[in-house]
Image 1 (tube, rainbow, N blue to C red):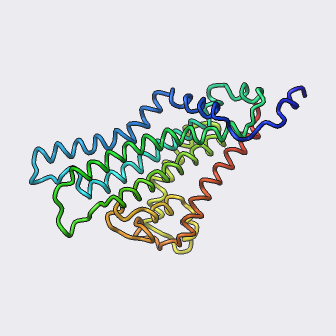
Image 2 (spheres, rainbow, N blue to C red):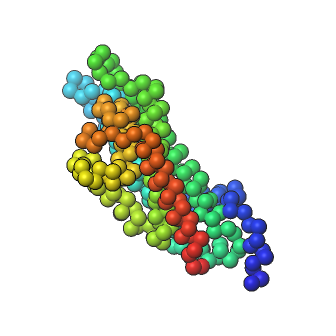
Image 3 (cartoon, helix red, strand yellow):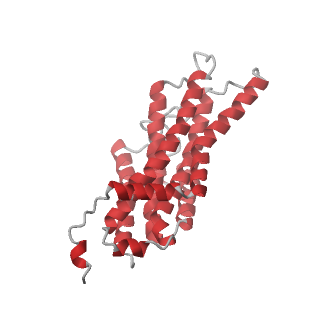
Length: 283
């Protein structure tokens, strides 16, 4: 009972010191950071490095490293692998205090549990979005300077296409992180949430998109991957346009408001679930 007065008036907004502590806590996990950097920065560097070597070895057979088709390919690869890294980072952030045995200590200090949860969001996003931006900048620079001469009929990657593609990729990673954070907090572990979300994004969503069921169409549209694929910029979809961007030629397009609702629902919904679980978890 003596701790109750001290806990009154505690702000649910996380202070910068707490956000900084969570940032350092994640950054010190070397294996996680190595995987995150490899999946976001290392992937485009290796991809374009191999393409450049092939082009230099046989220019007549292999297109320049920065050809537009390569931009679409690396965009797909960074989306898939970046999503996995974002989910792993979010699930780790949502369970770090439990696995390290620090949750009880943090609770008895009188800190707001909501503040403890919210502090993980800017700290984790600062990591995943910054390293992804570096990796995507590599793709943009190679496309801009090593694209080679293009035919008039070839797909051209403009600066606007790059900006839209970069923002779309970052949004995808935000979703991966937020869902991983909420699901990790709910389940109290990080391995199962990562596996579940990989299965959802890599297996289930493409199956639903390629083989839509007429009687379950609205249910399929609740998958965040479906909404995101229909928002995908056409340059990343190989020029296939569905809805406002590109993506799923087999699934009827969703209205823009529906796509926004689904995406916002996944972010907000899993944030609320994760925060609720942290607020009610036994110390």
